[in-house]
Image (cartoon, rainbow, N blue to C red; front, side, top):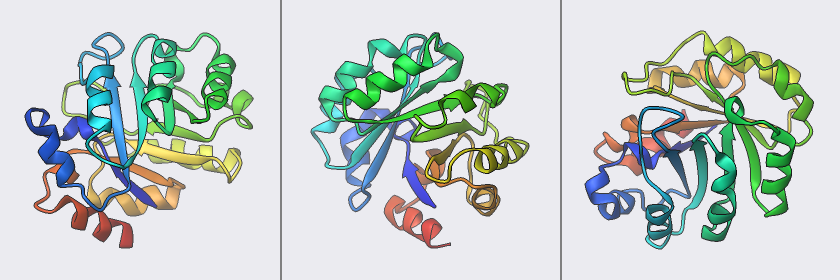
Length: 209
């Protein structure tokens, strides 16, 4: 199991300093929120472009936006390695997947807790990963929902072993064992990481568990 810190939970007034605290970590998660798909705004393309110059971590983008197609080309030019956009806002998922893969990036699809997984099966052979939201992506505290473990296990049982399952939303240390047992490969953690005295040691300790 790999743990990736989410920059959206860092001190936004000191991103340079927060990135310095991650020295020794190889990956960084970017939650891009437009204030329309969910009632919150994180950072735009200009900030991401500037942030990319401050470190050498591999970056993935989680597009929590109403029109993910508007972001793909720009993110590819910045050097983003993976993109996951929400199934709930896609009219033509196959076009989205082909576009991302055509630009040399890994393609993922994110799903909210309310979304059933049946529709994803049509794209199983094209997906590199599915990002399962384990909390409602709103501004009310994002509490971890244990019933998402059943959804993760269902995806793991049905989809190819080569496809990764990412999880994001309200995840704390005591959730990791259950998430691993359900079949999750990658865990996104924000507040728990940046709230630690030493984020790097915190992540390494959790991964060793």
